[in-house]
Amino acid sequence: MGKREAIAAFVDQPGGLIKALHRLQDQSGHNFLSPQDIELAAEVFDLPTASVWGTATFYSLFSMTPRGRHVIRVCESAPCHVVGSLNILSELEKHLGVQVGETTKDGCFTLEVASCLGVCGVAPAMMIDENIHGNLTPQSLAKILAGYA
Image (cartoon, rainbow, N blue to C red; front, side, top):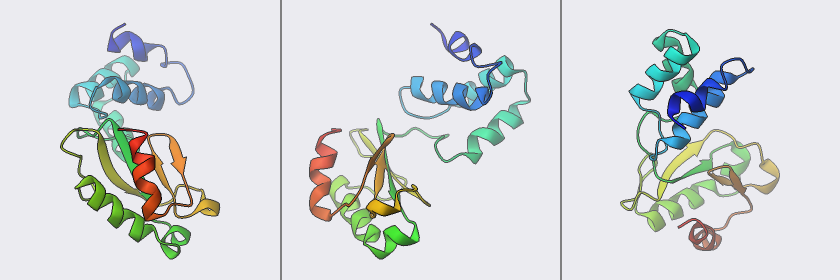
């Protein structure tokens, strides 16, 4: 099934454009939306390209640049910050050899930050793809990452 067919099913659904953009990003192979993907969605949904571009750039789960196979988002909310999210972020940067916004040389991980993951009860927390990991310690990170490598 081609990209056009994969997103055409979402045209008449509530939130269809966002669902289509997720599908395109998932199919990209590099976890991002290309300019061609944006143009295709605009054509299929009969929308101005600028409207689709605005939607895609508004939501943090979409990226316009290639990312790793797995995206790590470390929560920066006040509750996570108070219990050590900066230590977690620093340890991830050391372990992965990248800074926030960068992708590992092997293309496995991209490191990002998030304003809030909504899981304050298990702070500090991070999200890898759609999976939440909480009650993090610097020592727990290597085991968690090994499950994705």
